[in-house]
Image (cartoon, rainbow, N blue to C red; front, side, top):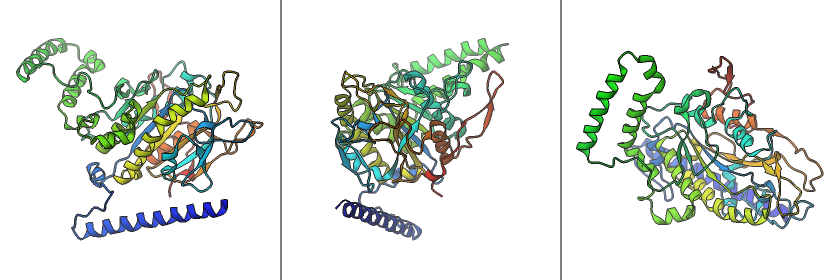
Length: 434
């Protein structure tokens, strides 16, 4: 019976891919004849808006606190470590995930699952630093996050809003590191709501008088202080802020024009709105967006915490993947869903799981990566600590940089005179489409 179900699922996947191929062929053929034609469910305007070069973007869904692999993408029900969490089937043949993700189960074949991530950092702050930069913390150097690297290496002069954005609260937001503070993530703590300080509080005439007076003061200060001015980036900051405040692209942060039904499909939560804003930002061509979901630090009441967070994460990530596909954006958008580490196979006396940086899970897909793969495995009884086919954090990030079009081996001289590469890892070639 299990083989029949797997075969049916494989057949359905094959038919769906054939339908997508026929759809793409039809659209391209009609476009070649000079006809405008969009099939139901497709929105190619988003892809066209990003330009003919199809510039790539990265969306990282940060599951802060360390999600349990056993209550997300690697459940082991009935085993010695599984607990009460049940598993459900998905559109990837043979893959089962935690019961809290029924909507994602219908979209997960657009991604791949890695069940054997390994890290040497089991502390929240250090683990988060590692997961955002691909480097372990170093007291002599602050490394740039992967989003900062993409903004630095893949500039876009036509994008007037920040190229690197962080949505939702995080005590350790993505930093520019040795690339400079201007590559820090632009932080929005309450995505989809009114952005603070983005509109002038006074009328146009008064605003212009203020700017004129500011320029008089700035000119006087610049006299004989050229190097100091260049270091402070004062003029650059003012010009950038004014350009941002007047940009039409700023509407990507606002959800007032988005139909209520679409907003509700992501979930009426801070994280759900963040995922919707992330989709709107990559439509504009923003290079890197991270959306944070807190609440996975489940030393106590682990199973309740994951059920509650699953109700937030499931609709948001499922609709995000669906939207990216329907808008012809998934092929140019890498999606990564990951936490700083996983949770212990053993359940503690508080019905919780503790920190576990060995054999945790993540989701990855889009942007030139294979879909439908399941890499690595963990012991369902918890007797074997190390996973099969371990994958290093730095290798994961080298892979993402490669598909984004950035040479991960590029070295820059840091402020302390040390040559440092963007990544010390090696790309995982089996994840990359030929």
